[in-house]
Length: 381
Image (cartoon, rainbow, N blue to C red; front, side):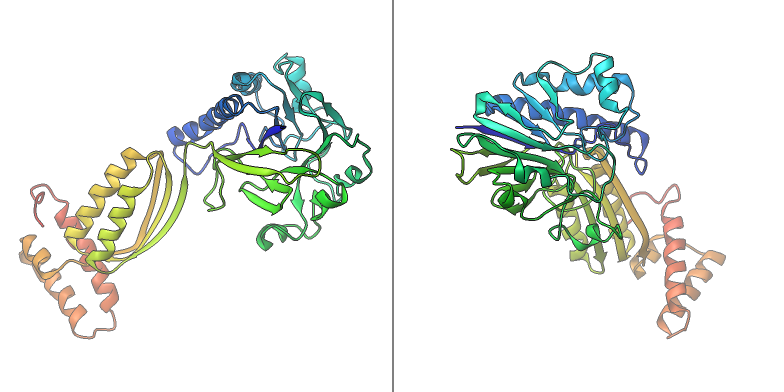
């Protein structure tokens, strides 16, 4: 029974400018680790071939060391790696693939499918029908030739392509271009009589129909809940049989983007419980709104400090989180003299229907926070 591992969009060499240098470096390194994990899974699952549906590399200008590291990361699986040029690593007249060949980086079991022509895979009783990109963008459906490709009746027909299935991806993605680029007909598996169509370009896991799947990137790289971080193990009993597709976890870092509004103590309790439950080494972007008293802020600060040490990256946005000290908080600050008078006036402005009540509350929170952070105030509620 033929078995394949379907992956795509490794994006080796991707940069993470929005992160601190240490985190950006670790996230880039995780992409090599994902390739090593793919090789381990391919060996453990005894697949006949690994299908890489485009964008192994994020750019055409990567250094030689990066190319060597990529192919060395694949060494854990000695079967065939069938690699398709995508839009980021298109098979240009002079491309990253030419340079990889020149420096001897590509091993004998890694096969670049840079021409739209059938590849016989005798060991799996299959024919691979690739639709490589020879430029970054094209308005043509490069999978059209699959409809007329002749193969023996006893061979599986496996399509390999990189692009956007027409009318099937989220509207926000389809609308980014006035004219669709790298389009793929939604019914291509049917019109080309494919047993399976392995797709790349969409970075999440997505099933188009029973025979057409996007595997997504094996290591998540953005804040979208779309099933990224997996590869697909595909079993097909015989030509015409329905494929059995099993997702397998690959990625190291889960990405989460949270917006949380805090108004009462139970809101903070729930947030801290969420932080504790988050898998280690996650990437978290956290936006907080609402208000906290001084004790709540101290609890939050401690929890965020611990979370920052436990996760790969923690970015917090707290500009819209007001500090609203209670009467007990103010009393514990032991403010007197001029500062005490200012605090009293700000308190009055909050409680007497003053039109500047919101400003007064914000100012009181800032002042209380400054006083609370002074030496000698540690341990106060």
